[in-house]
Image 1 (cartoon, rainbow, N blue to C red):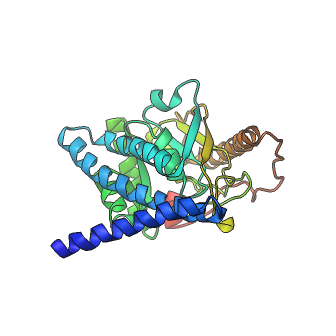
Image 2 (image 1 turned 90 degrees about the vertical axis):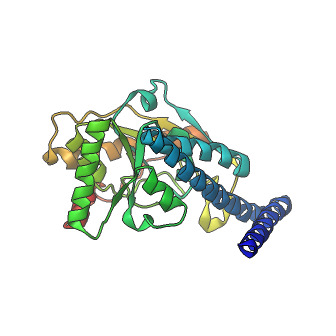
Length: 303
């Protein structure tokens, strides 16, 4: 045990020393800042995941498990601001984040840095959905299991349907919101855009009879763009859009709902990015058909 603690302490010393050295080197070699912030971000994620496990147990014991992910998100917000210098500004004049419950919150998915965006906007009594392969991931997976995340097995249509049905029931019974990324994967886009939307979030909202609340982030490739080894400190602009009601909608309405919501979000992302950059940005005439994934089997139930 003592040997484990010794080597753990040694690893932490080397990790911290390397991170600090890279930050200092970035004053002369800008790309060193990319690796410094990358190391700092991973360390922040592990620290907050460990905190999340602890706080999830605590909130379960006192009967408020729905607050665990909100508390962990806020912790990550402040830790990342301290270690990387990246923060967010939220435009939500009508306070939709705190007054709309339950709801399906959706956002654009640009990179791993979107976890920080969740740290800023994640509302109380809300949980995320995640692919089932994350369930057994050390630290992050442990936290997600303890805090009530909804896991979806995309290779198993029966499991996927059950996951969505369980989430809808949980949302209605406990007034628990859910946050999802309808693109399904990160875009790593240098310019404002959206990948085609999967329909899982919209099926869930219709099934639960709750509103959809889009949250858009301006394109932040000026702060993080992995292909160019660029990771800078700065501010990401966010905007919370008006809730979209789903009452009286059915599964037959989901495709139109998905398409219309994606078009709305794309316009807002382009507008927000133009505002942040201080220059006009043209909207691409081609965005991949109607922007809705057509699928069958397991994917059709969660996409």
